[in-house]
Length: 114
Length: 113
Image 1 (cartoon, chains in turn red, cyan):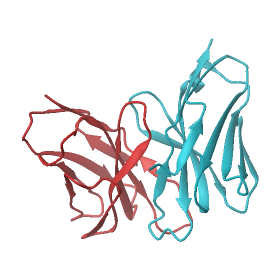
Image 2 (cartoon, helix red, strand yellow; image 1 turned 180 degrees about the vertical axis):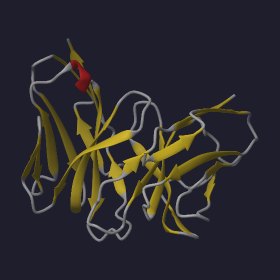
Image 3 (spheres, chains in turn yellow, purple; image 1 turned 90 degrees about the vertical axis):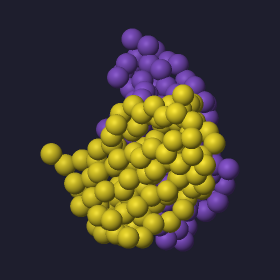
Image 4 (cartoon, chains in turn blue, red; image 1 turned 120 degrees about the horizontal axis):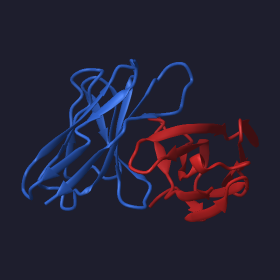
């Protein structure tokens, strides 16, 4: 059963804490992406990675960090430097070969700062 | 700032009617994609139209692209209550090495039974 999974579905954080959101895919996709979505808004790109051990900042990378140690996994850490972290976080992946431009999305993690 | 802007922001129609959503963008694109999002869920890819294409169909979906006006429209024909969702356009800019998507703000569609 191929797909992209995110965990947890809901996450609560106290101010000043770092939290890590998980994203795993078994689609053998090369590229992975993290987006942030605020209520009633579109998605904004946080970070992306096209290859293991390499990643690039997106439009709103400040206060976030990522790693790409394995092709299947692209965890996102929301650090205490992120001033307004409450949002819906979406992970996506895409193959870089085969001419497919579409991205495949996970179910999302809703992060709430208490 | 977002590349794409969608219009209307919200749309409410009766089942069986057609729904039209529009997307405008600012800079030249490689392709434009439409995605659907059910409340609280991830996005699902609906259709992709390349910059050299003017119209594409997929089932009850029809997408048009006018590069001279930098706009696209998504038409859902014979709508169903299950079509209730948010619809987003996303563009891939020309010479975008990472093929990154830039999303619009979305249209929230409600189809009343």
